[in-house]
Every structure is written in structure tokens, then in C-alpha cells.
Length: 117
Figure 1 (cartoon, rainbow, N blue to C red):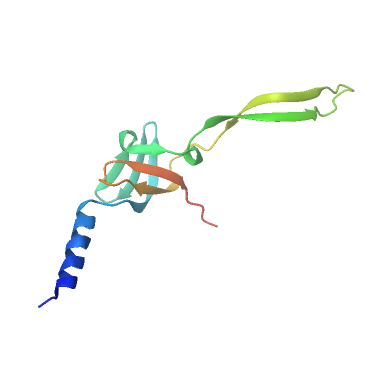
Figure 2: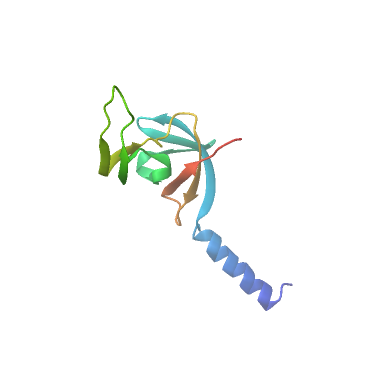
């Protein structure tokens, strides 16, 4: 027969597992318009369930630059100030991603792409 400490541990673990704590998942992008990510045999996530970080989406970034253009036909001029650049990190079909399943299990944060070297 389990002692009191073991019963308390078991009850606590059961409560944690029942609350569906945050967990790490891997998935594969199956489409991008709309985004769908296959996780396992019975689970394919859609955009309504996903939260994207900048690591997995295209976004604009404002940077400060200060240099001269490359010389072309004796034409050189300064290039300085705040400039907007587009970062192309968007998902494409076939990308493998790492995600966090948020507590409760209804939303998933797509953290980054998995890089196989």
C-alpha cells in the first residue's frame, strides 16, 4: 500500500498532467496558404491555432545605415539614415518546425525552423 507521500506525489502529478502543461512538439509544414502543420497522425494544425514568431514569418525591419553606394560609372553617393528592409523567413511546404503547445493545448507557438546539417 502506498504511503501518504507517494499518494500526494501521485495526486500532484495527475493534476499537472490534467492541466495539459506546455510541451514541445515538432511538425512539418504541409501548406502555406493557409498555413497547415502536420504534427502526428491525428493532428494537423491550422492558422487559427498557431502563433508565429519572427523566426518563421516575413517581416519588415528598420535599420540605420551609413555608407556610400558602390561606384558605378563614376557615380557614388552617400546612403544613410533609417532604411526599411524585408526579412524573408516565411514558412514553405516541407519545412520542419519546433513548436510549444501552450497550457490547455489549444494554441501552439511556432518557434523556429529545424535545420538539419
